[in-house]
Amino acid sequence: MSSVETSSGLGGVDWLVIVFYLLAVIGLGVWLGRGQRNTRDYFLGGRDLPWWGVALSILATETSALTFIGVPAIVYAGDLGFMQIVLGYAVGRVILAVVMVPYYFRNEIYSPYALLGRAFGTSAQKLGAVFFLVAGTLGAGVRVFVTCIPLQLMLGWSVTEAIFLFVGLSLVYTWFGGIKAVVWTDALQFVLLLAGGLFALFYLPTLIDGGWSGALGQAEVAGKLAWLNFDFTLAAPFNFWMGIVGAVVFVLFTHGIDQLVAQRVLACRGVADGRRALVFCAVSIVPMMLLFLFVGVFLWVHYQHAPIPIEIPENSTGKKQTDFVFPIFMLAEAPVGIKGLLFVGIFAAAMSSVSSALSALASVSTMDLGLVGKQKDEAAGLRVSRWATVFWGWMLVVVAFLSREITSVMNAAFSLVGLTSGALLGGIVLSIVSNRGAAWPVVAGMIASLIGMIWVHSTGAVHWPWYTLIGAGILFLVSVPLLLLAKPKPEVEA
Image (cartoon, rainbow, N blue to C red):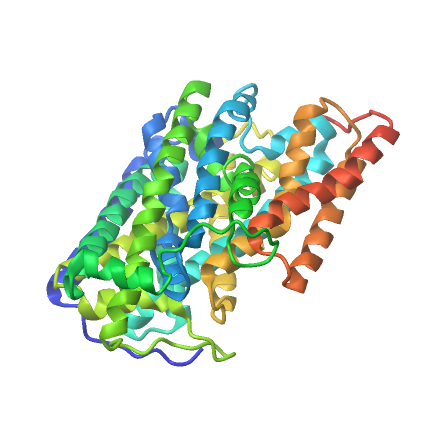
């Protein structure tokens, strides 16, 4: 990456807003950690969190720094085609609310991968957990990197310094507060994220001749408002079939199987509340994504007539890193005071993603891999869980540092998660359909799916919205015949 130009665009009021926010979030997280006794409190919040708080937390996690920075960048470099994927997101959430949520509450489980253990034995559960840990760390690490973009612009810091700051701040309140701190700080951060996006949406047209109508007119002439594409292709660009098929299946993983979201649903008070949370997310995701897509449209129009105040960096291949566009605008052109609030919006999105990842990774590594086991000493289990959180914080730092050459963080994060998402989704589907079975056919299918998806990704011929569907298809092709041939004797039940 080329060196990033710095700017003294933040005033004293902006810094005051940022520092106050960071201290408030950390203080809230520490305060919420009071009275925790065991891993159930730490990872499930005692299963006593209200559905609306869980819903806002889920929205904050999925509307992460990837959305705040990455979605406007997609439109800046292209058009509104990503909306086709968003519509699939909404449909997938409704399907999950109806079909999947009841399985979460039939037994006391800490992650969906426990369903693999109940159906096929501990080896299937542990392999599912490892798959999530690898893909979850890679995807979350990319999200951490995108958070560093505004810090590079603001302070001229190195990538490493910025990464340590964000992971360290998020680690403090996640260590003390567990999932309860994650949910309630996420809910607060979602409000700030939304406020930052709304300000940009209404402020940008004031900088453009003709205001809203003028900006939309210029965007339409340039093809920036095009969004519906019925041409079927497995490769880019986004198209209707990617959304209505690929994205729906992808959401069945991200919101039904991926511990980042599933952990929040498991913390609800029951099936009805879990369903309410997911349906609320389904209704909310379309306007949220439209908000940031149109921020990208207005940014593009604005910079057709005004010089970009800070040069957009290039990666080592010479490609412009358009993810810098929105942070550049915020730093150089937003009003004093509001500038601080906009950066707080990015920090909120980023810390939400990091804390959610830390909690999910720690939960799966301790509970599904058996690091805590069935210890009678609840305090010892809680200590192990907290130190696991620290370990995954270090892993996110490493991955984030390695992500600095990425051109589009949005596509990179989803592609990495997609390498294992099909295997995990397919395995969970089999565990629901087949109450009992031998573990090795499922294990073989998951490994075959991973190998197949690594090859698919290496060809560059398939876009990430199809990854989950293809990966699940590979697992079914391998595992189903083997399950029919194998003796139905599961290993020791998890």
